Image (cartoon, rainbow, N blue to C red; front, top):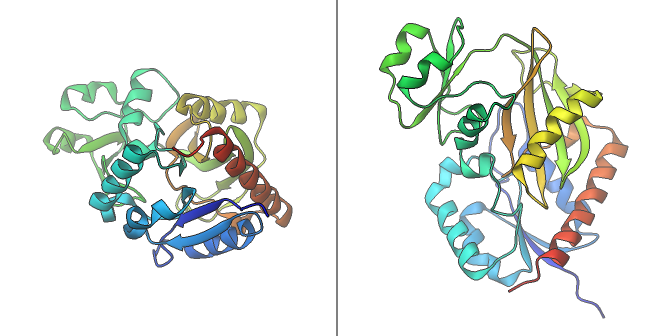
Length: 278
């Protein structure tokens, strides 16, 4: 009798997110993935202690890392030291590694909201009515504030990022498994970020999103590319979520949800085949 692959599924079922129920999504996913794998759920604080008993670890809706930074760093260090297979792989260049990528993408001229972290770079920001100030280690809008331009020079640079406030028409998110596009959702009202509706992307939209999937170079995993549509019609990257992107699966059709589970199942099998356990 063949032995089914086993996964430790890391999630915080008690995490309270604004406008979303993270726990429902992971309960649904695990209920379907059990058809193909042996699964056990655990809180992110317990992952390092439990992961040795499984073929691999899947990190899903585990909440903002800043709430358990020390435990997360210990998990990463242990996983790297002993060759534990982690999905998404820990080599992600997006939010998994902090917000440095926003600075790098700005410097390299990618279509991203202009981002700086030094007062000597203030001249690189376009004029705006207000500016977004966010901690480099932030997530889920934690610590986000807005200030006028005359207050920018007195900010505590080093631990923060500064971006111009963008007068955008709407936000849109593109969801990927490995390098394959799955679906898109958008928030028609800029003031209601998580009131999402299905979105039919154009070829240009998909080319925009895919450039960041290519840039991230993750061979396996789930990613979400968040962007905003400016008044002029341009898309600008807001975030490249490659650690534990919430998927809003409750807002897509039954067929899209089924297709996502099928795609994730196939991705997990490919992941195991491509990274034999050490």
